[in-house]
Length: 481
Image (tube, rainbow, N blue to C red; front, side):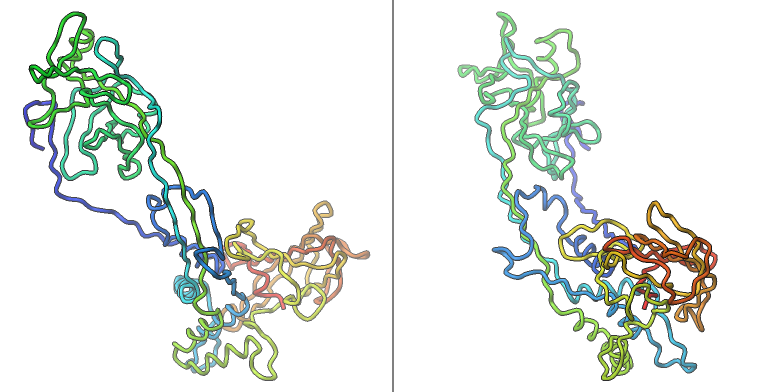
């Protein structure tokens, strides 16, 4: 920093400018594919400063800008079938099936699938602007004879190569102005003495610091101008005082009344300057946001492309088609994870419509879910029969909440490692009551009818012992036929 003329006035030359950008990716194993992908796309939105104003109108989906309906195309069973085929080791000599797991590689794979299928598009139509007030709002100001002013420290700074031209530090102020102080309590203004907002990349505000030479709207300046002598002066009673210089070589700090003049104006003020400010502009919002999701390929097309990009592409695609039931004469296996019997009537739980799925499930675009759910809700008839998923014990019955918990030790999940791994398992059913003749502590057999629903939807929560890592909930669709 090089000082010029006055120890309190400093010129700062800065030749380096830079921008810091931070990349952040959400990693949450409980997010569905759609949720992971959609949140990743949201991270690609412009920075907040580019979407500064909250839109007056939000136009989702089909609009004047985007002439199509957003497509929601996802099937969790197809996803699991795809992962089975994608990770299958066709070169294994012992014939073991390589099971898939959700890890960093799988998360990256899901993001690739989402990006290949969808594109998030938007048009931020922002015509918001500053408009001049018909009547300004004043804080301080006026002539030296009748005005009132706020105090500021006598040090002031001038800058080159910054978004602001001047900085000074108010001593007295109101909250209207202090909201724009920087971290050191300074006020940053441009060459027109307009206040800048350091909390928003030094954007313009509606406030101005008074130029003490001229009228600020209807507010008189502190100094008058003498045309005959070409000097500025102020009056203190009947005494005239020419302005004492305060500023830099070739650049006066007209936004401050100098310390000398301030002391003359009020001899109780020492080593300080004076200033005034006013609100000249208001921000008028006129902003619309159009946004949509464009489907570039179908889910089936994307996962087929992925399988064909791997080794043994024909075998992988054939295996996938077998799992989803596309092969002639084959049943629909949909991943073949399912180990437990369907607890509702019928061959498979997939015959029933889902009301709320496991995790942060996403049902449609642009709709909030109910948060994290660690079970699954199926629509059904009130009074529908319920069947035991395995040989087990009725561990707990809560008649107040219509909740039943079943437990079985050492349930073998064949896909969990080589040859299967035994896991203690508890199944909790909500909106259910025991049939007559059954009670807490009873042993029941797989497929035995033991309860019925008490509402038009039934909730299943399945929790397994994670072999030394405590108990954890799993998506019931992974294990229920």
